[in-house]
Image 1 (cartoon, rainbow, N blue to C red):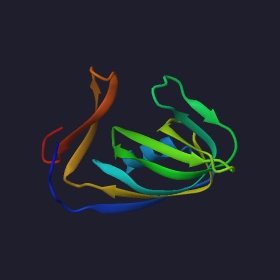
Image 2: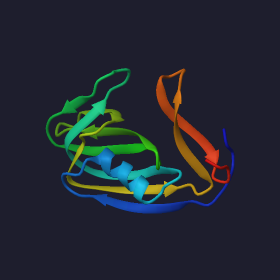
Image 3: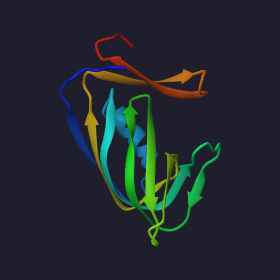
Length: 142
C-alpha cells in the first residue's frame, strides 16, 4: 500500500455515438501514455450494454437504451479495470465489469485523473487467476 501525497492532473474526453467504451479507453490510455489514471466522473448513454456480472465467467448483453450512472476504474498503458452501472427506461439498475461491446448512444463524457508519481501495471496473480493491479513509483524502472 502506498501513502504518498502528490499533484494530480486531469483529462476530459468525450466518446461519440457508436464508440466501444472499453476499446476507446484502452486506446486512449495507450495514445496518451497514461502510467496511472482513474476515472473520477462519467455521464452519458449507451445503446448496447455488455457486462460481466459478479462471479460469472461469461458476459451479459442488455437490450434497449440505458443511462450510464457510474463508470469507475483504473487505467494504464497496458490495461484497464472498469466497472459500470446503468439504468434502463424503467429506472432499474444493474452493474458489473465493463467488457467489449458497450456502445455509446448519444454521448459519454469522462473526467480522468492522472497520478504522475505512480505506474499501474497489470500482472498475472496466481491466487486470483487474473491480471491484477501492480502499483509502483514512477521512478522505479519497468
